[in-house]
Image (cartoon, rainbow, N blue to C red; front, side):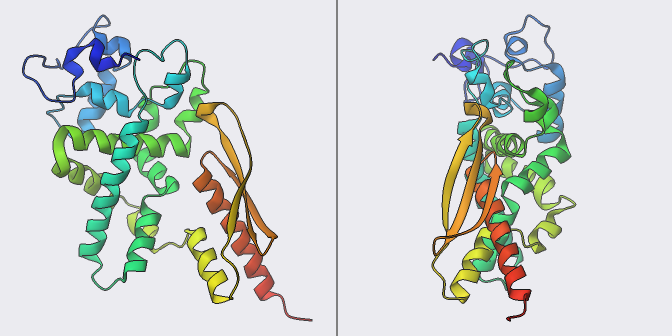
Length: 274
């Protein structure tokens, strides 16, 4: 498949003086045809500052995977899944560094738990909503636009992809500045760090403390188009069904199943023995 930067040389990942991207362009400009509007450029520059010489890269960061499954657009551009992979690692590194430096009394397990709470789908979607990413997602014409633009999975993926794009375009310092502004200084950051919603970890701790086998997660079924799948997962312990969960990602469905399991155990612990 021909990529968009192969169609238009000035979208190459390396910055070039030969092919500068103009601040304004009309509807005949190749980037406009690809979906990068003046409003989207203003959004990118508001978030990331001036000097974004690789606007095509940011377009990819905002491109939902439904685009590559849509016959009308699948040959135009790739989705943000590869950038999400990179952004996930960059975000994990920056959050790990911040927690390491600012929580010197925390043990390794506490640092890992806090990082997991910050970079999970729910938290990332919250960060994405606070900066309005959903309004600028490029979504396939045959997909449910409203559903995807409000989806935790789509928003979280785009947020991580944007971090990946910033890292490529501006390096680790640019990525750190973005994460500091829109994650660490977010009004809900401290609430996230002090919350206890990593139910999978809590379930493991519970089973270990009660000398039970480790929880076993099984996908019961999955449904929907490739870019809009939902997964239903069950969690078992000693062949006993403890809970189920349904979500757009297996990991989120596992968290919901673990939450139900913890609620079940809590209710049983509070019931007096007869």
